[in-house]
Structures are given as C-alpha cells and as structure tokens.
Length: 165
Image 1 (cartoon, rainbow, N blue to C red):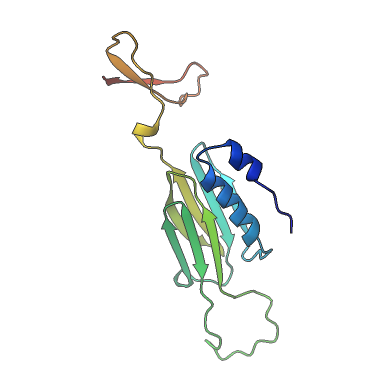
Image 2 (image 1 turned 135 degrees about the vertical axis):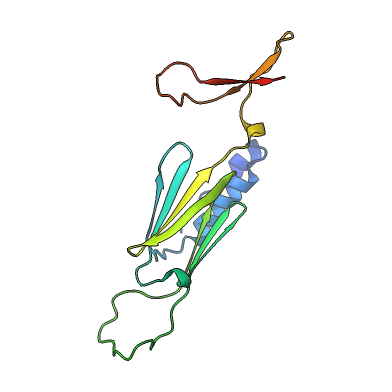
C-alpha cells in the first residue's frame, strides 16, 4: 500500500487538518472496489455532475443522501426470484453498493435523475454573499463593490455591483 506522509505539511500549516484527514482516509479506504463505475465532470465554473453506471437498478432501489460535505449513494440489491425465469448466465451485476463523495464547502445537490441505466447527480457550488470578496472603502468612500467574474465574456475587467455602505 502506498502511503504518503503528511506530517511535514501538518507541522508547517494551520487549519488544514480536515484536508489532510480527508486525503489519508481516502488513501486507506481506496480498496480497489470500482463498482459501480462513475464519472465526475465539471460543467461550468460552479457546476459539476457525477454519473454512475447502475444498470439493472430502479429508482426505488437507489438511496441518495446529502449531508454537510458528504454525498452517499446506496444501491440495494433486489430479491432474487422476482420472475419465474431460470438464469443461465448472470453477467449484469446486481449487487448492493455504497459510494461516498466528499463535497467542498457550499456544494449542494441540485438534481438527480436515472436514465438509460445512468444515475446523473448535478451539483452546484453556491458561495454565500458574505463569503465573496469585496472591495473595502478607503478614506471615506461611500460604496462597497462586490467583485464578480466577467459573465458577459467581453474580456474587460470584472463586472461590479454597487452596494450601499
């Protein structure tokens, strides 16, 4: 097992304990179980999608739980013998599973849907207004400006919205 020693970083940083604990826990729990396979994609500045291949599962067989900084997806195995057919070969996995995804602060689940054997979970990061960077008034300026990204794509400086001080 490859193990990375974070102790030199722990000695020279303050407040990153949660990050180092997360990395160590991931390294320990990465047991090689790749079922069900999944993709994680970035769909925009603050939008993400997790897609799991869950062939054979119905919406009622899946349980998605979003807690603070944690997304847990569970699939329950259906009871055998639902129909009278005798299975000659069982190649499609229908075993129970649990997948856990650590989420960054302010990331929430926006939508989940099951189509064509793929479970797509859309995530969005919403940083509260109080946490966004602000310009600070100097020498008695009357307004504060919230710094925003260049949403119109014209390449000029970031858009600004004036808020009363």
